[in-house]
Image (cartoon, rainbow, N blue to C red):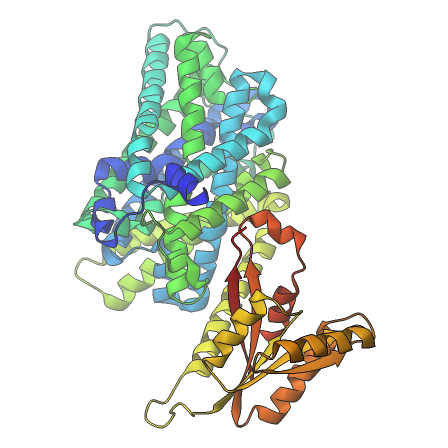
Length: 605
């Protein structure tokens, strides 16, 4: 039943040689990898206005020069990551760049930041999508957590079906969102030029008493949340069709152009229509309502905005498993993240991301707005390390024409470093947890790596000198009575060794005598040792006996505990029986010189 359900949800298993068919063309890659960046149009301008409105509506005109500065930084990042794509065509983005140029420790800071950021991306995106839905349908506000969780489950299942299938589905809502925002920009711009806009807009250039550079920098750093997701293309180069670096670079440029036009357009309309942030309605919702009224077009824009915010999480689902794979390949994450699932995707990474983001949504009750600064900082730390790594690469290698890209990376590094510092200073109450998350994540990376190194050292074998040492074999069979299960186990044991002993634990002298007589009558050709338990415990005397056998025989014989176990036909039948064999195995797993074997007997009824 479970495999059948899995086939319906996930789809048929794919052969390994079908992996080439899972590579993305530019059109599909743009949909999968840019949904996070493009969706930030829905809240990037709003984040700027939320800071400026603290000085009054008159200060909102500053959103225009700030938006222009954000656009300039976007241009620098796009050009910089384009260089990264060609310099590191195997993918990995900031993690690989930082590790290659600054060493493993700095690389882990970049990798850990990105992993945390991708988890936050899913939580923030689905919560923002829920906000868009509840703006249009306020009656759903009390069900925000459930709606967000359903979104996470949906996008998780979508990605488990494979990147090509998810890309095919994602293309339509992503490009519908782009069309909707362009429709909004064109419609709003036409109304503005035609003189049909009668909103009270703040006077551009008017002096605002009390405004400070610090506040403007804070608004700028908040607006830079619109740049999250820009790095995803450089992380996911292996997902592109050949020539992968060239296709990835073109996709990155297309994403930058679309994002820049949409972000600038929304910022201009917000100013032209005198939009101020409203806790009950998003900025995009207010603009759409002002331009088209609350009609079909308004609800279309809100629907596709909610959809793109929901699907923004898909960028994380595309990039997180690949980054986890690279960290696992370097032995900083568990090996399970290197395993491809039935649909040739890194399914363990996909599931892990879905679970952790769900925990975040539940923990914050769907109110993840306070996570946006932490989410943005999680991006700008890798941005800074990536830019710095590329600077070192240019200086070290000095290829022809290296000075121009070096200057570009230097400007980018100084800008993103400034934004990191602004976030830390102005929003410390929101981002201080980064000082807990990152050290914990890096500590976990180091412990995992240490385990794999210790394991490799302990398992390493000198093939020239170390050979198998033949020994005899003594088999201990714990028995709970005389039954078909015990008969089945003894028959198997007799095919492996002549040195077999059965062990029975009795709770009374009468039980001890009765079992001895029955065994003698049965006479299976195996001697029986009956242990007396004075405290109604099977385990303690049994373990003591096994310890004695091990002490006497370990040097000359392999000691094997062969556990009889019946397998029930129905899963719920297991609830009706003691799990003695399970506890016995759990104890014996820790013993170095004792081997464990379970001999199953499958029940028919």
